[in-house]
Length: 198
Image 1: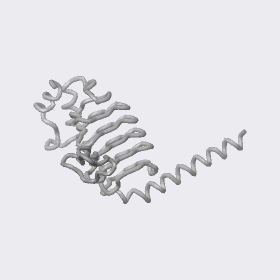
Image 2 (image 1 turned 90 degrees about the horizontal axis):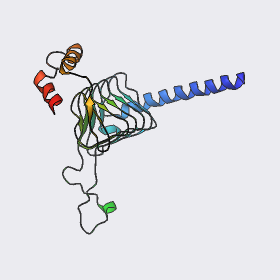
Image 3 (image 1 turned 60 degrees about the vertical axis):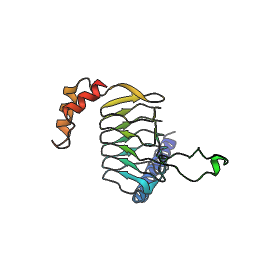
């Protein structure tokens, strides 16, 4: 039993080393990436259309698709396992052709997906084209996000709707902003008040 335990631990260690090596070799395929970027090398990505900031982690089983659009990820962003981002759509309006055979895009079929800083995307969430996920927000596991997520908002469900705010009051958001961002980068009080009033 002791030998089997040691062998299994060795296999796990070797697998982790090989995954890390694969990640380091594939990472330059991304359009841009920052420091401390960790991702599942077995995931499916439109590498050339994805820009990643510093301190970003992408969980296992990720699918990030953007053939004619971009996926832009800020700093300090966490993606749980099996997150899907789709920055593209099919043109379903052509009469006399099967949808499968339509390759022409219409305006709005492909739109960028943007994740601002300090965002957490829960396991199995799906983020669709044209969505901006605001600073400090949280997307619950399994949510389908088809509209922008305001800063410091917690959303969930299908389609995703606001569940709560990340912090209980505006004062706490202002303290958080002051601790993390320079004066020119901070969200102003009026904007935060509008978010809380929405």
